[in-house]
Length: 431
Image 1 (cartoon, rainbow, N blue to C red):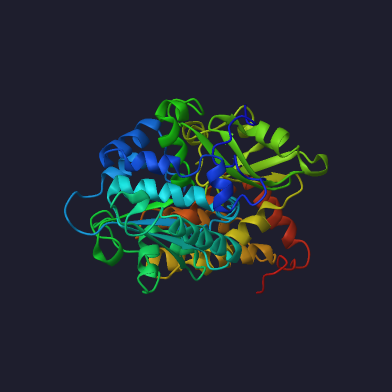
Image 2 (cartoon, helix red, strand yellow):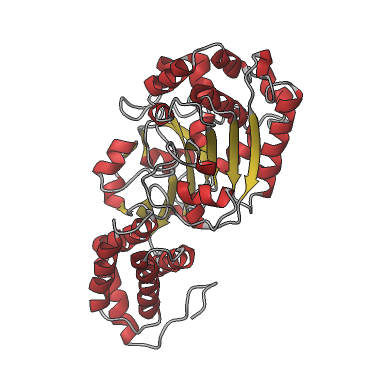
């Protein structure tokens, strides 16, 4: 089934898959032509009926999000979030590298459905090749008349742009991304107003993930029911999973939603690295709660199943952890990351992430106490839900799940470190 479920990655591996001639040869831009011949409201309805949910982490119905755009005469904007800063996530850059025209065509469809006349791809600054590929694809689309003053000769004007970000993790949050695009400091905004009411340049804006937009050409070309043939009733379609960690074949894999997690590890990734035993899995990026090996057995990769197991599908960044991995070190690396990436706007996040990094560092150096674990949990609980954006919740999630599920390992680490000299910091980090 996994081999048959190729919607997003169907052109990957073809020679010159990033060029417009290759894309046109496989039926590219026919979905956009079809969409332009439909009523905008019907385009949104088809995407809603297909059950496509946001692939950036929230899982909100994409068609419904498009319908939130006001129907007044103000300019409207589509903003594609290609910042992809979540540790463990690397799927969107592959779409941009291997099939950028699928993204461009999806943006045409989305803009027509929302009657937006401009779209931006906000790309993380370090992604040099993806940036160049997307810009080249946009240029090729202009040359063919698929973008510009009258796309496909329809009289509808649409311009697309690539904007290079500066690499801040917090700019993955949609309002911080909007501020950054406008040339302001990339801090999240207080909501309401929400982007559909007041977004880019104070105009109605929809922010979508790269993968969400790239899925729409298939939906428009083949219909909602064809898309629903993949996945489950409540989690329709396919999903790209970025798999890293202790597996023999890490990479990006497209499978139907509802695909067994252990099949992803054992079949797609060809098993655990060097025959290691599975210890844990982080299923949706570093901010999602960790799952024990026992919790992974029989678990399917869809929104509902992962939520029932106590975690989130998130961006689909599956981090596989083998036996022998020190989760104390792992948690310290994560707390250090979130402390570094906090924008500092909200006190609970600014102070909380800093204290969590200090406490885990204290434990790493052999100066920790068992009571520090309870203090870490208290910090995490007080941060959650008390900030403008979800970064504090993202930082708190690993702390709560790591300590709750592997407390015995943390206590053993603390007690053993007391009996010998302080350990060095993990490679790459300084006191």
